[in-house]
Image 1 (tube, helix red, strand yellow):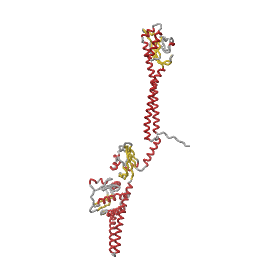
Image 2 (image 1 turned 90 degrees about the vertical axis):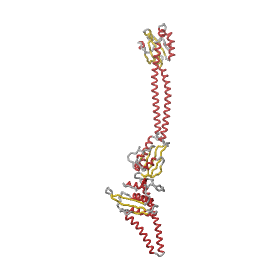
Image 3 (image 1 turned 60 degrees about the vertical axis):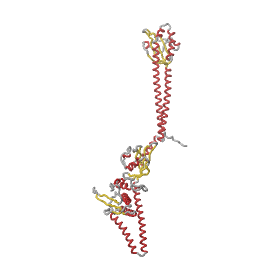
Image 4 (image 1 turned 120 degrees about the horizontal axis):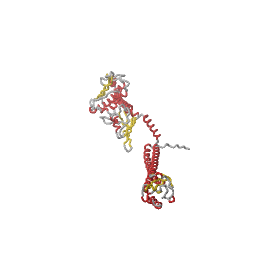
Length: 518
Protein backbone atom coordinates (compact mmCIF):
# COMPACT_ATOMS: atom_id res chain seq x y z
CA UNK A 1 0.00 0.00 0.00
CA UNK A 2 1.44 3.33 -1.07
CA UNK A 3 0.36 6.48 0.71
CA UNK A 4 0.71 9.55 -1.48
CA UNK A 5 0.86 12.80 0.43
CA UNK A 6 -0.44 15.66 -1.69
CA UNK A 7 2.23 18.19 -2.55
CA UNK A 8 1.56 21.70 -1.25
CA UNK A 9 0.18 24.02 -3.88
CA UNK A 10 2.77 26.19 -5.56
CA UNK A 11 3.03 29.87 -4.79
CA UNK A 12 1.67 30.71 -8.24
CA UNK A 13 -1.28 28.35 -7.70
CA UNK A 14 -2.07 29.88 -4.33
CA UNK A 15 -1.96 33.38 -5.79
CA UNK A 16 -4.17 32.31 -8.70
CA UNK A 17 -6.79 30.81 -6.35
CA UNK A 18 -6.69 33.86 -4.10
CA UNK A 19 -7.02 36.27 -7.01
CA UNK A 20 -9.82 34.24 -8.62
CA UNK A 21 -11.78 34.22 -5.34
CA UNK A 22 -11.13 37.93 -4.86
CA UNK A 23 -12.36 38.75 -8.36
CA UNK A 24 -15.44 36.56 -7.88
CA UNK A 25 -16.29 38.23 -4.56
CA UNK A 26 -15.85 41.70 -6.04
CA UNK A 27 -17.96 40.91 -9.12
CA UNK A 28 -20.74 39.19 -7.11
CA UNK A 29 -20.78 42.01 -4.56
CA UNK A 30 -20.96 44.60 -7.30
CA UNK A 31 -23.78 42.68 -9.01
CA UNK A 32 -25.77 42.46 -5.76
CA UNK A 33 -25.23 46.12 -5.04
CA UNK A 34 -26.24 47.05 -8.57
CA UNK A 35 -29.38 44.89 -8.36
CA UNK A 36 -30.49 46.52 -5.10
CA UNK A 37 -29.65 49.95 -6.45
CA UNK A 38 -31.46 49.28 -9.74
CA UNK A 39 -34.47 47.90 -7.87
CA UNK A 40 -34.70 51.09 -5.80
CA UNK A 41 -34.26 53.22 -8.89
CA UNK A 42 -36.96 51.22 -10.70
CA UNK A 43 -39.39 51.77 -7.82
CA UNK A 44 -38.62 55.50 -7.79
CA UNK A 45 -39.11 55.66 -11.55
CA UNK A 46 -42.43 53.79 -11.25
CA UNK A 47 -43.59 56.22 -8.53
CA UNK A 48 -42.73 59.23 -10.73
CA UNK A 49 -44.49 57.64 -13.68
CA UNK A 50 -47.65 56.89 -11.63
CA UNK A 51 -47.64 60.42 -10.18
CA UNK A 52 -47.36 61.99 -13.63
CA UNK A 53 -50.23 59.88 -15.01
CA UNK A 54 -52.49 60.62 -12.03
CA UNK A 55 -51.80 64.36 -12.24
CA UNK A 56 -52.46 64.40 -15.98
CA UNK A 57 -55.82 62.63 -15.47
CA UNK A 58 -56.80 64.95 -12.61
CA UNK A 59 -56.05 68.01 -14.76
CA UNK A 60 -58.01 66.73 -17.76
CA UNK A 61 -61.20 68.83 -18.37
CA UNK A 62 -62.96 65.81 -19.86
CA UNK A 63 -62.63 63.97 -16.56
CA UNK A 64 -64.25 66.80 -14.60
CA UNK A 65 -66.97 67.04 -17.21
CA UNK A 66 -67.68 63.26 -17.01
CA UNK A 67 -67.95 63.47 -13.22
CA UNK A 68 -70.72 66.00 -13.54
CA UNK A 69 -72.85 63.53 -15.58
CA UNK A 70 -75.39 61.24 -13.92
CA UNK A 71 -73.29 58.13 -14.83
CA UNK A 72 -69.55 59.00 -14.68
CA UNK A 73 -68.51 55.34 -15.21
CA UNK A 74 -69.93 55.26 -18.74
CA UNK A 75 -67.42 57.86 -19.92
CA UNK A 76 -64.55 57.37 -17.49
CA UNK A 77 -64.07 53.56 -17.80
CA UNK A 78 -63.15 53.61 -21.54
CA UNK A 79 -60.97 56.65 -20.89
CA UNK A 80 -59.13 54.91 -18.04
CA UNK A 81 -58.52 51.77 -20.13
CA UNK A 82 -57.11 53.90 -22.96
CA UNK A 83 -54.81 55.76 -20.58
CA UNK A 84 -53.50 52.49 -19.07
CA UNK A 85 -52.68 51.21 -22.54
CA UNK A 86 -50.99 54.41 -23.66
CA UNK A 87 -48.97 55.15 -20.48
CA UNK A 88 -47.89 51.58 -19.62
CA UNK A 89 -49.36 51.60 -16.11
CA UNK A 90 -51.11 48.60 -14.57
CA UNK A 91 -54.21 50.37 -13.29
CA UNK A 92 -56.02 53.70 -13.32
CA UNK A 93 -58.80 54.07 -10.77
CA UNK A 94 -61.08 57.13 -10.72
CA UNK A 95 -63.33 57.42 -7.65
CA UNK A 96 -65.60 59.81 -5.85
CA UNK A 97 -64.31 61.78 -2.85
CA UNK A 98 -65.39 58.96 -0.51
CA UNK A 99 -63.35 56.33 -2.38
CA UNK A 100 -66.13 54.56 -4.34
CA UNK A 101 -64.64 53.41 -7.64
CA UNK A 102 -65.98 54.75 -10.96
CA UNK A 103 -63.29 52.83 -12.95
CA UNK A 104 -61.12 49.71 -12.45
CA UNK A 105 -59.16 47.31 -14.70
CA UNK A 106 -61.57 44.62 -13.54
CA UNK A 107 -65.13 45.88 -14.15
CA UNK A 108 -66.49 43.74 -11.28
CA UNK A 109 -64.61 45.96 -8.83
CA UNK A 110 -66.45 49.11 -10.00
CA UNK A 111 -68.69 50.50 -7.29
CA UNK A 112 -66.62 49.05 -4.47
CA UNK A 113 -64.48 50.97 -1.99
CA UNK A 114 -60.90 51.76 -3.08
CA UNK A 115 -58.30 49.76 -1.14
CA UNK A 116 -55.60 52.11 0.00
CA UNK A 117 -55.03 55.36 1.80
CA UNK A 118 -56.89 58.40 0.44
CA UNK A 119 -56.97 60.70 3.48
CA UNK A 120 -54.17 62.98 2.26
CA UNK A 121 -55.75 63.21 -1.19
CA UNK A 122 -59.08 64.11 0.39
CA UNK A 123 -57.23 67.03 2.00
CA UNK A 124 -56.00 68.16 -1.42
CA UNK A 125 -52.49 66.53 -1.42
CA UNK A 126 -50.91 64.30 -4.01
CA UNK A 127 -48.83 61.44 -2.55
CA UNK A 128 -47.16 58.14 -3.53
CA UNK A 129 -47.16 54.87 -1.62
CA UNK A 130 -46.62 51.11 -1.95
CA UNK A 131 -49.77 49.21 -1.06
CA UNK A 132 -51.24 45.74 -1.60
CA UNK A 133 -54.63 46.04 -3.24
CA UNK A 134 -56.91 43.88 -5.34
CA UNK A 135 -54.18 43.51 -8.01
CA UNK A 136 -51.43 42.74 -5.47
CA UNK A 137 -48.54 44.94 -4.27
CA UNK A 138 -48.15 48.08 -6.34
CA UNK A 139 -46.51 51.49 -6.33
CA UNK A 140 -49.35 54.00 -6.69
CA UNK A 141 -49.99 57.73 -6.68
CA UNK A 142 -53.28 59.28 -5.44
CA UNK A 143 -54.32 62.77 -6.61
CA UNK A 144 -57.45 64.85 -5.92
CA UNK A 145 -59.63 66.06 -8.85
CA UNK A 146 -60.52 69.71 -8.25
CA UNK A 147 -63.37 71.50 -10.08
CA UNK A 148 -64.21 75.13 -9.30
CA UNK A 149 -62.17 74.99 -6.11
CA UNK A 150 -63.73 71.89 -4.61
CA UNK A 151 -62.65 68.23 -4.64
CA UNK A 152 -65.08 66.32 -6.89
CA UNK A 153 -63.17 63.06 -7.10
CA UNK A 154 -59.91 61.18 -6.68
CA UNK A 155 -57.68 59.39 -9.20
CA UNK A 156 -55.05 56.69 -8.52
CA UNK A 157 -52.54 55.30 -11.03
CA UNK A 158 -50.15 52.50 -10.17
CA UNK A 159 -47.65 49.92 -11.37
CA UNK A 160 -47.50 46.48 -9.85
CA UNK A 161 -44.33 45.53 -7.93
CA UNK A 162 -44.15 42.40 -10.04
CA UNK A 163 -43.69 44.53 -13.15
CA UNK A 164 -41.05 46.60 -11.41
CA UNK A 165 -39.19 43.38 -10.49
CA UNK A 166 -39.34 42.28 -14.13
CA UNK A 167 -37.74 45.54 -15.21
CA UNK A 168 -35.00 45.14 -12.58
CA UNK A 169 -34.60 41.51 -13.59
CA UNK A 170 -33.89 42.53 -17.17
CA UNK A 171 -31.23 44.93 -15.98
CA UNK A 172 -29.83 42.25 -13.67
CA UNK A 173 -29.60 39.81 -16.57
CA UNK A 174 -27.57 42.33 -18.59
CA UNK A 175 -25.46 43.10 -15.52
CA UNK A 176 -24.88 39.38 -14.90
CA UNK A 177 -23.57 39.02 -18.44
CA UNK A 178 -21.16 41.89 -17.92
CA UNK A 179 -20.11 40.49 -14.52
CA UNK A 180 -19.53 37.05 -16.00
CA UNK A 181 -17.41 38.59 -18.74
CA UNK A 182 -15.42 40.55 -16.17
CA UNK A 183 -14.92 37.43 -14.08
CA UNK A 184 -13.79 35.45 -17.11
CA UNK A 185 -11.43 38.20 -18.25
CA UNK A 186 -10.02 38.54 -14.73
CA UNK A 187 -9.55 34.78 -14.46
CA UNK A 188 -7.77 34.62 -17.82
CA UNK A 189 -5.54 37.57 -16.91
CA UNK A 190 -4.79 36.07 -13.51
CA UNK A 191 -3.96 32.71 -15.10
CA UNK A 192 -1.60 34.30 -17.62
CA UNK A 193 0.18 36.32 -14.92
CA UNK A 194 0.48 33.32 -12.62
CA UNK A 195 1.67 31.09 -15.45
CA UNK A 196 4.54 33.52 -15.88
CA UNK A 197 5.08 33.54 -12.12
CA UNK A 198 5.19 29.72 -12.15
CA UNK A 199 7.94 29.85 -14.75
CA UNK A 200 9.94 32.27 -12.64
CA UNK A 201 9.44 30.31 -9.41
CA UNK A 202 9.76 26.93 -11.18
CA UNK A 203 6.45 25.86 -9.67
CA UNK A 204 7.77 26.01 -6.11
CA UNK A 205 5.59 26.93 -3.18
CA UNK A 206 6.39 29.54 -0.56
CA UNK A 207 7.98 27.05 1.87
CA UNK A 208 10.24 25.67 -0.83
CA UNK A 209 11.28 29.17 -1.87
CA UNK A 210 12.01 30.03 1.77
CA UNK A 211 14.12 26.89 2.23
CA UNK A 212 15.98 27.57 -1.00
CA UNK A 213 16.76 31.09 0.20
CA UNK A 214 18.09 29.72 3.48
CA UNK A 215 20.24 27.15 1.65
CA UNK A 216 21.44 29.87 -0.70
CA UNK A 217 22.51 32.12 2.15
CA UNK A 218 24.23 29.27 4.00
CA UNK A 219 26.11 28.11 0.89
CA UNK A 220 27.00 31.67 -0.04
CA UNK A 221 28.76 32.37 3.22
CA UNK A 222 30.18 28.87 3.70
CA UNK A 223 32.09 28.70 0.42
CA UNK A 224 35.65 29.98 0.75
CA UNK A 225 35.95 31.11 -2.83
CA UNK A 226 34.91 34.66 -3.62
CA UNK A 227 31.55 35.14 -5.31
CA UNK A 228 30.51 38.47 -6.78
CA UNK A 229 27.30 39.20 -8.70
CA UNK A 230 26.90 42.39 -10.74
CA UNK A 231 23.69 43.77 -12.19
CA UNK A 232 23.23 45.12 -15.72
CA UNK A 233 24.73 48.50 -14.70
CA UNK A 234 27.82 46.81 -13.18
CA UNK A 235 26.72 47.53 -9.63
CA UNK A 236 27.37 45.00 -6.87
CA UNK A 237 24.19 43.00 -6.39
CA UNK A 238 25.71 40.37 -4.10
CA UNK A 239 29.09 39.62 -2.54
CA UNK A 240 29.96 36.87 -0.07
CA UNK A 241 32.42 36.92 2.79
CA UNK A 242 35.16 35.31 0.69
CA UNK A 243 34.77 37.95 -2.00
CA UNK A 244 35.06 40.78 0.55
CA UNK A 245 38.23 39.27 1.96
CA UNK A 246 39.90 38.54 -1.39
CA UNK A 247 39.11 41.97 -2.87
CA UNK A 248 39.86 43.82 0.36
CA UNK A 249 36.42 45.47 0.31
CA UNK A 250 35.35 47.18 3.51
CA UNK A 251 31.80 48.05 4.53
CA UNK A 252 28.60 47.32 2.65
CA UNK A 253 29.53 47.18 -1.04
CA UNK A 254 26.07 46.13 -2.27
CA UNK A 255 24.75 48.77 -4.66
CA UNK A 256 28.18 50.30 -5.29
CA UNK A 257 29.65 50.47 -8.78
CA UNK A 258 32.65 48.25 -9.55
CA UNK A 259 34.62 51.34 -10.53
CA UNK A 260 34.13 52.72 -6.99
CA UNK A 261 35.53 49.70 -5.12
CA UNK A 262 39.13 50.93 -5.34
CA UNK A 263 40.44 47.83 -7.13
CA UNK A 264 43.49 47.79 -9.43
CA UNK A 265 42.72 49.07 -12.91
CA UNK A 266 43.39 45.71 -14.63
CA UNK A 267 41.08 43.86 -12.23
CA UNK A 268 38.39 46.54 -12.60
CA UNK A 269 38.67 46.25 -16.39
CA UNK A 270 38.22 42.48 -16.21
CA UNK A 271 35.08 42.85 -14.08
CA UNK A 272 33.65 45.49 -16.44
CA UNK A 273 34.37 43.49 -19.60
CA UNK A 274 31.34 42.37 -21.59
CA UNK A 275 32.99 39.16 -22.78
CA UNK A 276 33.61 36.28 -20.34
CA UNK A 277 37.04 35.90 -18.72
CA UNK A 278 38.40 32.43 -17.99
CA UNK A 279 41.12 31.76 -15.38
CA UNK A 280 42.74 35.18 -15.67
CA UNK A 281 45.40 35.98 -13.08
CA UNK A 282 45.06 39.41 -11.46
CA UNK A 283 46.65 41.16 -8.54
CA UNK A 284 44.51 42.59 -5.75
CA UNK A 285 45.88 44.67 -2.90
CA UNK A 286 47.63 41.76 -1.17
CA UNK A 287 46.66 38.68 -3.15
CA UNK A 288 47.03 36.97 -6.49
CA UNK A 289 43.56 36.04 -7.78
CA UNK A 290 42.27 33.81 -10.53
CA UNK A 291 39.21 35.54 -11.98
CA UNK A 292 36.38 33.97 -13.98
CA UNK A 293 33.43 36.01 -15.24
CA UNK A 294 30.25 34.80 -16.90
CA UNK A 295 27.50 37.12 -18.18
CA UNK A 296 23.92 36.39 -17.15
CA UNK A 297 21.56 36.91 -20.08
CA UNK A 298 17.93 36.16 -20.76
CA UNK A 299 17.30 37.97 -24.03
CA UNK A 300 19.16 40.98 -22.63
CA UNK A 301 22.19 41.49 -20.42
CA UNK A 302 21.09 41.07 -16.82
CA UNK A 303 24.44 41.07 -15.07
CA UNK A 304 27.66 39.16 -14.47
CA UNK A 305 28.67 36.35 -12.13
CA UNK A 306 32.29 36.57 -10.96
CA UNK A 307 34.21 33.86 -9.11
CA UNK A 308 37.52 34.57 -7.38
CA UNK A 309 40.16 32.06 -6.26
CA UNK A 310 43.13 32.94 -4.09
CA UNK A 311 46.34 31.60 -5.66
CA UNK A 312 48.78 33.77 -3.70
CA UNK A 313 50.35 30.76 -2.01
CA UNK A 314 50.27 28.79 -5.26
CA UNK A 315 51.96 31.63 -7.13
CA UNK A 316 54.66 31.87 -4.49
CA UNK A 317 55.21 28.14 -4.60
CA UNK A 318 55.37 28.32 -8.39
CA UNK A 319 58.04 31.00 -8.11
CA UNK A 320 60.02 28.85 -5.71
CA UNK A 321 59.58 25.87 -8.02
CA UNK A 322 60.90 27.90 -10.93
CA UNK A 323 63.88 28.89 -8.82
CA UNK A 324 64.48 25.28 -7.86
CA UNK A 325 64.18 24.31 -11.51
CA UNK A 326 66.79 26.92 -12.31
CA UNK A 327 69.02 25.53 -9.58
CA UNK A 328 68.58 22.06 -11.02
CA UNK A 329 69.48 23.23 -14.51
CA UNK A 330 72.50 25.05 -13.11
CA UNK A 331 73.59 21.91 -11.24
CA UNK A 332 73.15 19.88 -14.39
CA UNK A 333 75.33 22.32 -16.28
CA UNK A 334 77.86 22.30 -13.47
CA UNK A 335 77.83 18.51 -13.43
CA UNK A 336 78.46 18.52 -17.18
CA UNK A 337 81.37 20.94 -16.75
CA UNK A 338 82.69 18.93 -13.77
CA UNK A 339 82.60 15.78 -15.89
CA UNK A 340 84.59 17.53 -18.62
CA UNK A 341 87.14 18.73 -16.06
CA UNK A 342 87.35 15.28 -14.48
CA UNK A 343 88.02 13.73 -17.89
CA UNK A 344 90.72 16.30 -18.41
CA UNK A 345 92.35 15.42 -15.06
CA UNK A 346 92.17 11.68 -15.83
CA UNK A 347 93.66 12.22 -19.28
CA UNK A 348 96.53 14.26 -17.84
CA UNK A 349 97.26 11.48 -15.32
CA UNK A 350 97.18 8.86 -18.08
CA UNK A 351 99.66 10.98 -20.03
CA UNK A 352 101.97 10.93 -17.04
CA UNK A 353 101.51 14.56 -16.18
CA UNK A 354 100.31 14.17 -12.63
CA UNK A 355 101.60 17.54 -11.45
CA UNK A 356 99.69 19.39 -14.18
CA UNK A 357 96.58 17.38 -13.33
CA UNK A 358 96.83 18.38 -9.65
CA UNK A 359 97.44 22.00 -10.60
CA UNK A 360 94.40 22.03 -12.95
CA UNK A 361 92.08 20.45 -10.38
CA UNK A 362 93.32 22.74 -7.59
CA UNK A 363 92.68 25.84 -9.71
CA UNK A 364 89.07 24.77 -10.44
CA UNK A 365 88.40 24.10 -6.76
CA UNK A 366 89.89 27.42 -5.73
CA UNK A 367 87.71 29.24 -8.30
CA UNK A 368 84.47 27.59 -7.06
CA UNK A 369 85.45 28.11 -3.42
CA UNK A 370 86.34 31.74 -4.07
CA UNK A 371 82.87 32.33 -5.55
CA UNK A 372 81.21 30.68 -2.58
CA UNK A 373 83.38 32.55 -0.10
CA UNK A 374 82.65 35.86 -1.82
CA UNK A 375 78.86 35.36 -1.66
CA UNK A 376 78.82 33.98 1.88
CA UNK A 377 81.17 36.68 3.15
CA UNK A 378 78.86 39.38 1.81
CA UNK A 379 75.52 37.72 2.56
CA UNK A 380 75.59 35.11 5.28
CA UNK A 381 71.76 34.97 5.45
CA UNK A 382 71.24 31.32 4.35
CA UNK A 383 68.26 31.82 2.06
CA UNK A 384 69.71 34.80 0.22
CA UNK A 385 73.15 33.18 -0.01
CA UNK A 386 71.72 30.00 -1.51
CA UNK A 387 69.57 32.04 -3.91
CA UNK A 388 72.52 34.14 -5.06
CA UNK A 389 74.75 31.09 -5.57
CA UNK A 390 72.10 29.41 -7.70
CA UNK A 391 71.41 32.59 -9.69
CA UNK A 392 75.16 33.10 -10.20
CA UNK A 393 75.54 29.68 -11.82
CA UNK A 394 72.33 30.22 -13.79
CA UNK A 395 73.50 33.61 -15.06
CA UNK A 396 76.96 32.27 -15.88
CA UNK A 397 75.36 29.59 -18.05
CA UNK A 398 73.57 32.34 -20.00
CA UNK A 399 76.78 34.35 -20.46
CA UNK A 400 76.01 36.93 -17.76
CA UNK A 401 78.31 37.71 -14.85
CA UNK A 402 76.50 38.08 -11.52
CA UNK A 403 78.50 39.74 -8.77
CA UNK A 404 77.74 40.78 -5.20
CA UNK A 405 78.76 44.36 -4.47
CA UNK A 406 81.43 45.07 -1.89
CA UNK A 407 79.07 47.15 0.27
CA UNK A 408 76.82 44.15 0.82
CA UNK A 409 76.65 43.03 4.41
CA UNK A 410 73.80 40.91 5.67
CA UNK A 411 74.62 38.59 8.56
CA UNK A 412 72.57 35.61 9.61
CA UNK A 413 69.88 36.41 12.17
CA UNK A 414 69.40 40.04 11.16
CA UNK A 415 66.16 39.50 9.28
CA UNK A 416 63.01 39.66 11.43
CA UNK A 417 60.71 36.62 11.69
CA UNK A 418 57.91 38.68 10.12
CA UNK A 419 59.77 38.60 6.80
CA UNK A 420 59.34 35.05 5.48
CA UNK A 421 61.97 33.44 3.27
CA UNK A 422 59.34 32.91 0.56
CA UNK A 423 58.90 36.66 0.13
CA UNK A 424 62.67 37.15 -0.02
CA UNK A 425 62.88 34.58 -2.83
CA UNK A 426 60.01 36.28 -4.64
CA UNK A 427 61.53 39.75 -4.39
CA UNK A 428 65.21 39.13 -5.07
CA UNK A 429 64.69 36.17 -7.43
CA UNK A 430 62.38 38.11 -9.76
CA UNK A 431 64.62 41.17 -9.71
CA UNK A 432 67.68 39.09 -10.65
CA UNK A 433 65.79 37.18 -13.34
CA UNK A 434 64.61 40.42 -14.96
CA UNK A 435 68.13 41.89 -14.76
CA UNK A 436 69.69 38.79 -16.37
CA UNK A 437 67.07 38.89 -19.15
CA UNK A 438 67.77 42.59 -19.75
CA UNK A 439 71.56 42.12 -19.76
CA UNK A 440 71.82 39.27 -22.26
CA UNK A 441 73.57 40.47 -25.40
CA UNK A 442 75.00 43.59 -23.74
CA UNK A 443 78.74 44.25 -23.54
CA UNK A 444 79.73 43.84 -20.80
CA UNK A 445 76.98 41.56 -19.46
CA UNK A 446 76.99 42.10 -15.74
CA UNK A 447 74.38 42.08 -12.97
CA UNK A 448 75.30 43.54 -9.58
CA UNK A 449 73.41 42.68 -6.41
CA UNK A 450 73.64 44.65 -3.18
CA UNK A 451 72.01 43.50 0.07
CA UNK A 452 72.47 45.33 3.34
CA UNK A 453 70.65 46.90 6.26
CA UNK A 454 70.68 50.56 7.21
CA UNK A 455 69.23 52.66 9.97
CA UNK A 456 65.77 54.12 9.37
CA UNK A 457 64.34 57.40 10.60
CA UNK A 458 62.16 55.67 13.21
CA UNK A 459 65.17 54.36 15.12
CA UNK A 460 64.99 50.90 13.60
CA UNK A 461 66.58 49.41 10.52
CA UNK A 462 65.41 48.52 7.05
CA UNK A 463 66.55 45.97 4.49
CA UNK A 464 67.85 47.30 1.17
CA UNK A 465 68.00 45.03 -1.88
CA UNK A 466 69.43 46.67 -5.00
CA UNK A 467 69.86 44.98 -8.37
CA UNK A 468 71.58 46.82 -11.22
CA UNK A 469 72.59 45.65 -14.66
CA UNK A 470 74.46 46.81 -17.77
CA UNK A 471 71.42 46.43 -20.02
CA UNK A 472 69.58 49.12 -21.98
CA UNK A 473 67.53 50.22 -18.95
CA UNK A 474 63.87 51.20 -18.68
CA UNK A 475 62.20 53.98 -20.67
CA UNK A 476 61.39 56.73 -18.10
CA UNK A 477 57.90 56.98 -19.63
CA UNK A 478 57.31 53.34 -18.66
CA UNK A 479 58.96 53.44 -15.21
CA UNK A 480 55.67 52.88 -13.38
CA UNK A 481 54.14 50.51 -15.93
CA UNK A 482 56.79 47.82 -15.40
CA UNK A 483 55.23 46.99 -12.01
CA UNK A 484 51.75 46.44 -13.41
CA UNK A 485 50.43 42.97 -14.17
CA UNK A 486 50.64 42.08 -17.83
CA UNK A 487 53.21 44.72 -18.85
CA UNK A 488 56.44 43.43 -20.34
CA UNK A 489 58.98 44.60 -22.90
CA UNK A 490 59.86 40.97 -23.70
CA UNK A 491 58.01 38.71 -26.14
CA UNK A 492 55.22 36.68 -24.58
CA UNK A 493 56.29 33.27 -23.48
CA UNK A 494 54.49 30.21 -22.23
CA UNK A 495 52.07 31.25 -19.49
CA UNK A 496 52.36 34.94 -20.36
CA UNK A 497 54.64 37.72 -19.17
CA UNK A 498 54.45 40.73 -16.89
CA UNK A 499 53.70 39.08 -13.54
CA UNK A 500 57.16 38.92 -11.87
CA UNK A 501 57.69 42.58 -11.02
CA UNK A 502 54.02 42.96 -10.11
CA UNK A 503 54.49 40.18 -7.55
CA UNK A 504 57.62 41.90 -6.29
CA UNK A 505 55.76 45.17 -5.71
CA UNK A 506 52.95 43.31 -3.97
CA UNK A 507 55.38 41.56 -1.58
CA UNK A 508 57.27 44.80 -0.89
CA UNK A 509 54.08 46.72 -0.11
CA UNK A 510 52.87 43.90 2.11
CA UNK A 511 55.87 44.52 4.37
CA UNK A 512 55.60 48.31 4.27
CA UNK A 513 58.50 48.81 1.86
CA UNK A 514 59.04 50.79 -1.34
CA UNK A 515 60.04 49.70 -4.84
CA UNK A 516 61.66 52.10 -7.30
CA UNK A 517 63.28 51.92 -10.72
CA UNK A 518 65.82 54.27 -12.29
